[in-house]
Length: 241
Image (tube, rainbow, N blue to C red):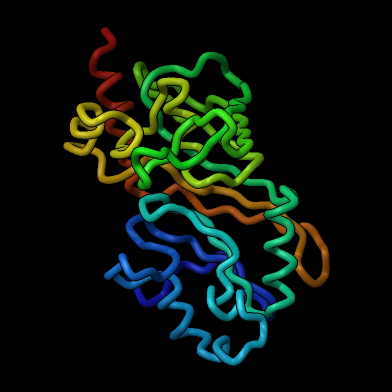
């Protein structure tokens, strides 16, 4: 694992990193590779002496993004910052923007997907649209169209596990390279030329946990995602007379 993640912002209260794809955020018995939490433990070992048990056990990590998803991750450096940022997530006061490359065309240039998300009873690794599940809302906007693919911006209003991936599958517009939700054949074909799930946590806006001033952070789209867009664009241009 890279010994130094790109740091987008840091002060005495918290830091924000740009997590690369392929890195798990939190430690777990099932995770054998180094995690973001391992990196924080090396960088801020003093956290183990803090009194707030949740802050200490999570080493300040306020939220999570999937292993294959890249982008912004907030890490509190003090218990008070941890409580403040976590509460903003719970209250849905943090504005989030994700970029996704999808199969097909969205039903409109802008819209809102509202469908309950929960773990599937028959497959504990996957989530789906489950009647009676947890409320989940994702707004979206189409940024670019590339024939049978689109680049879209997603604005999740709730923070359910795999929410964006599940909502796009629900519309039959799965994310490129999504081995869990694109379907076995589609995912296998994708993975012959796409390195991972094409989802990136691009922007976060929230209140500073101490000063309460507005903070807006952005993680640039990574090279692997740009390379996929360039390939799609080049192949599309080659097919146009």
